[in-house]
Image: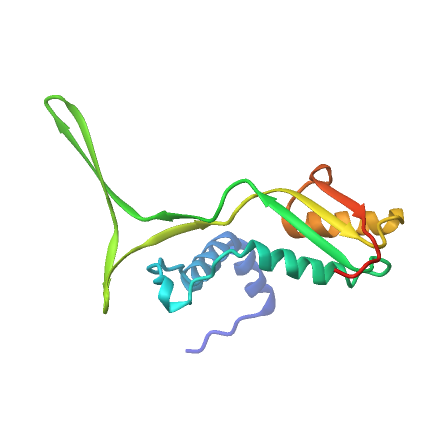
Length: 172
């Protein structure tokens, strides 16, 4: 015996079980979501790990901001509060003794072909403290505003921490 579903019956079932179907759909999406993996830190010799280079960032910002209409030649100087920081993964063991609690923490290491390396759990990039932008076109208010907004968007600095000054027309 073959069951024939009428559209009205199908809509009634969907309406009746819509929350169950929604939960199932969310569950399937979560199962299919790619899981992040902790990867061991690359050795400095491999050149694969991304290093923060303040001078290169300043040069790139200078080149990019020089393309702003009316800005002319631009030079950017950035200051940072602290350098690049890596937080290593650690195993923590807590034990209760007669004298109190004892906590032992060991850094997680993995073996690779050339030795052992610590597992990096998190990398924190430097936090910017301030920016100085020297531009040939900074005598125009609209150019100063655009340069300030661009540096703010790229560094996360507030406008109160960005200074835009008029530069001379002489070559570097």
